[in-house]
Length: 565
Image 1 (cartoon, rainbow, N blue to C red):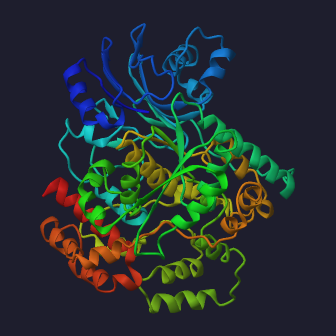
Image 2 (image 1 turned 30 degrees about the vertical axis):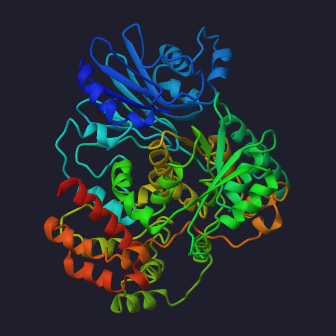
Image 3 (image 1 turned 90 degrees about the vertical axis):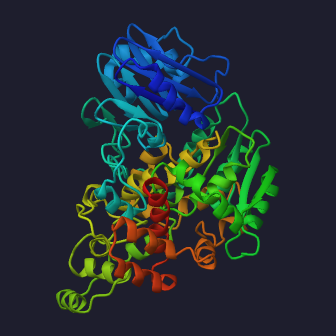
């Protein structure tokens, strides 16, 4: 929806400079306001109430600014008999009545700042809208706006998290002294939690009524996200998740759908499935072809749009696709795989729950005497050592590899905080916090807002996710069982029953063809961050066992070269 920036001093010039850096996030309107102690700024992408430009909102010496969408703001106006019309005004009125508790009454995706005698920051429960801050009183939608005002240096604890999970983990960012507010938290000088997902199993859910409830919740979620005074389209990969969203959207209107593919690489290209769905739902369908030339020519721009390194290779084609979409809002299917255990690797981890081996101690000693530098070895080591086996679907470098590759000192990555003891629901909770919150949602926000597009994720709806956490294990099952049951009403069988295919494209082939992998060692000889011998080992056997490790190192090297060399 927009960019927000603020500083705890009266300095419109600084705020103007920061807003101009984030102009791409909102090209329709810009304004800056100060109260007696702070200055807030706002770039607007107008989606609803287009003719009304009232941010930052200033009244009674209280400043309010927010980025995102409050889906229930009209309901809140009626409930509390508010004499206002817009989301920012609703936030102000609720703040006056309830203080920090106001955030529990709003529903949507948001990053909110309030200055009332001091600075308060709020972020939605999923982390859909980014919010960065410094302890000196600066906040922004993007890191690059904060970097104008501080000296940049690397946070090596965040680098260790990046190696483990593709991204730094809130409250860390890759930069020292710049923090990101964790999802479901607020900041008033300290980080405090205002929302947490809980696992409360409800035995009333059986397969039939759970399937019906899921469909109703999904329809409701899509309808909430169809609120806009502009046209809304949908991303369409041809997989069941985006196809189901697009189909529900198409129930009441003709929509535009968008997909991307890779000519000459049919094993990666899913556009034929997207066409099947587009024909089925009668959407106006657009296709984009992504090439090696596009990959390299846009790489530096994507690094800038990322703000900090995030080692998900799909950021690049997502950015390219966004550049070709002529709309302000699109829907996306993120969240379904994690909520309904759609990844094949979840099945492998589920197998450990019922495994019984009477010789575990002997096998543990055997593994310790015969170490292997591969994930499979590490997973079995954890199992035999009675340690948590699952540590995120997107875990790349495990701790022993991090210790081996880093020459600089960093804390061990804290994975325990994302484990609740909820059985297979630990998979979902962990990945909501790390994989979805720190990687997938940042891809949607940063890559699409770079082209002034807001992406919305109907599967990641609070009511829907709380429903999933209430399901018995034998009702949720795995392999997206319930989603497939709902989809039977909306999609062709060939889409529902097709084998799951992850988002992939030939990035490693392209890097090798252009001899780009050498950059990892070249940059490291200047940065001296990594152990060169281990880097060479990873590079030598990367195509066999270290594909994602290679990408993680390459992306960081490109980012480091851009920012520090």
